[in-house]
Image 1 (cartoon, rainbow, N blue to C red):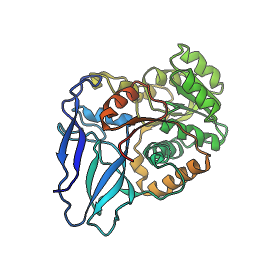
Image 2: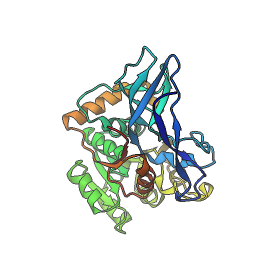
Image 3: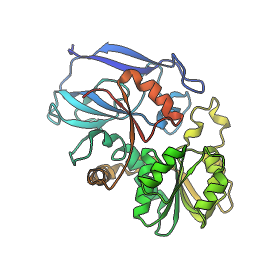
Image 4: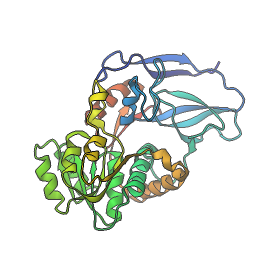
Length: 340
């Protein structure tokens, strides 16, 4: 038996609508001894992302639902604390899909585990703008959205890690970039710090008019993160030949009946002419993982790629941080710091 005790957040019962007390609970168990070829990781940083919420439901989506009693899914940064594999040494830092737990055992040849190469970026950035959310924004924009200089690009959830990368990358491509975010502070940050041309506060009550004023030539690329009323406002301004990469639609993730949701596929599929629109997963470009990670990490280290983050301390605060993130209470990337 290992000397370590693992604490993990598990799915105790499936949430009905918003997450309530008793849906997710913390359990403890001893960490077993390593077998030959295995590696023990200690979690340092945990990423909280919207996609985790639909996976708590008992419905088949693009990924299987979390099983009752299993840890909540999620990517983390871990440090190797014990190794019986010649591929890893104690002290190595990796990104890994460990879930919400303090320790995690992997096989030495486990897929989707990547050693972090120090490029001068903060460690936690590899879970944000230099990590999965950043790669999602970059790949969705460049390979699905295919922006061209002079086009208008609109991105929802603009102050989050995905929107942050989408907007700044689109500016580099010579586009007119408009963000949509909730509240004046987020909108001010998106324009003044991130360099977007405009940012619309969807909470201000003038979404249609404000968006039309910011997009006088219509919308050529819309990067979808939220769905709902935001998607409907965008749809009114979509140009012929537009592209709509659909990353997600967080506005519906707490809905009690997912079958009754009007999704972005309904909204954009009803247009005539229909824009090119499709759901995508960042794993479609898994072969470019290291290349794009290095590109984004380099931009972070140089100060070229700006971002913000909200940090909760300790696994005990992960659930409340997650609930707050789904309701837009975070500013930028939501992280949980588990250990130094």
